[in-house]
Image (cartoon, rainbow, N blue to C red; front, side, top):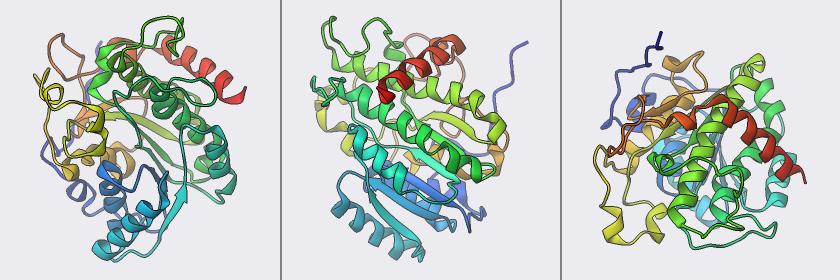
Length: 309
């Protein structure tokens, strides 16, 4: 029998602040990657407005400080911090993990790149997979003990409808042999985000850690679109939810903070509700391969081997 999809009172036009209205996050600590701009800053703003102690984990700490000041001014919450984090640099991830002390209640893996030209990290990894998946995988795995100490932590993986562009090619993840296609690479990395949520939710359930993934919708104003030609940004849009940044952050905040998600893990959401199966030709829903438990377990093993090498 098919499981009933989880629904909430919120939808595509709901904002992050609306989703967190009435939620008290006082005493809870959160980390938002890419928290200096776009969806990240609006996610951090909503969590801060609800009283959380928020760390903006960012590559550009000057931009992070500007975002911190802006969030403090708009929410009145001064418990805001900026910490350097480059997800494509394993040493940077290790330094962030080593510096963290105490419990962590909310981790929002928000940062990402999209449709970049072929660039490789110092480890020889394709940049989209390295940034969008492997960096966040290493960060979450490194912070697992801190998440467990929170007794009810939540991890949020920001994926994309772009995951419907293809599954993970385990035979050539890094495009060492097949021709590079920026959209195939992006889709693979976003599928990996969902598979991470599926496997982490299973592995970490005993620690009370809830892990879910989401599609924020299409937000043309964010820096994520900088590698996308204007014509490409408006194509293939059947079923796409076009949003501003406050609306785009709403599903992330729902998964991070709402009591409506208590006890829920390993699922994929869009427009503040659990997504149904993907239908060909429609830019909505979740592909079956992205929820496949065998794929998820295999990706976990491959990722662990890579980040620990």
